[in-house]
Length: 373
Picture 1 (cartoon, rainbow, N blue to C red):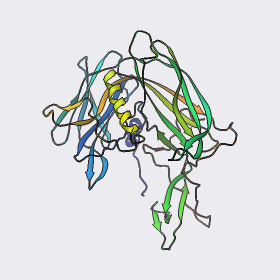
Picture 2 (cartoon, helix red, strand yellow; picture 1 turned 180 degrees about the vertical axis):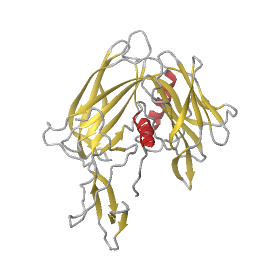
Picture 3 (cartoon, rainbow, N blue to C red; picture 1 turned 45 degrees about the vertical axis):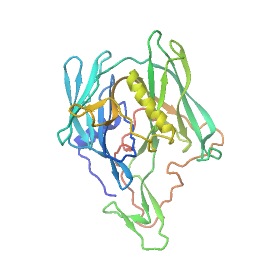
Picture 4 (cartoon, helix red, strand yellow; picture 1 turned 60 degrees about the vertical axis):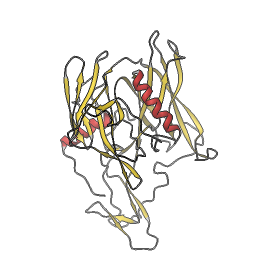
């Protein structure tokens, strides 16, 4: 693993991509053919991102490969067009100042490097009510093993309340992003960390150790929900919705964690798409597992209706609230180490061990999150 130097512009673009309000779901499909996968949203928050990738199948090994070099834009119902820039491989973003408007329609249009042209259906950006209250509850038996019988960790469960509007049909999606302070920035499996190159060097031994190395600067790991949390107001229209479970935060330590919660108002078509995605993921576990079949959304090849595209481009009003999760006032929790195990640091000797920089990525940041306590 090598050190990476980030020019100021690249850092800005990646930060914008990482911290845009509505994240896409990363789903890998078990397919016998390569299919295009597209995910993205326009919201009434600043910025919008679109992920374009190809689902690959190589000798029954399935993975998602970012599709570079697309030319993409978002077309509004008022005739305006916003060009998207590729801020990282397969990730395309609007300017940071772009913001969707309630009542306006939006449509994704893009061309792939091989000349194929795709567009989504038009999505109208609706409204979503504010989050009224967020609160937490300790669950000493919150994490079970795969059998569902043995307790392996405690959790802090986070809930919210909101008021559903009267006389309108509403569809909701909840997502979250969680920040945890991290002090291990690289692990050398069977080796030690080289000072100059920042790489792991293997140890010639029958049973070489695995060493962890501390971060050279403040660092936070970033976690995302991997389950689809949906609600249609069939039975709650015009009522107060209380105690909606949003997240089960593992008890990694007694230190707190920062949770960024999104309450998203979907269109009916978007809700039906994510409901199908949720129903399929329930047969396998979570979104990190492979769904049994691809889910075709609202994007099509304008010249070839038989060219199937996975994913969805939508317009969604969003309410974002940051919530500090307290973990220092509960008795006898079962801890789950952030690494999944206890850290094993290289023994201290003269000039050893070295430290490793906290490198910016989707899952890690050296920039102190807003709202961190």
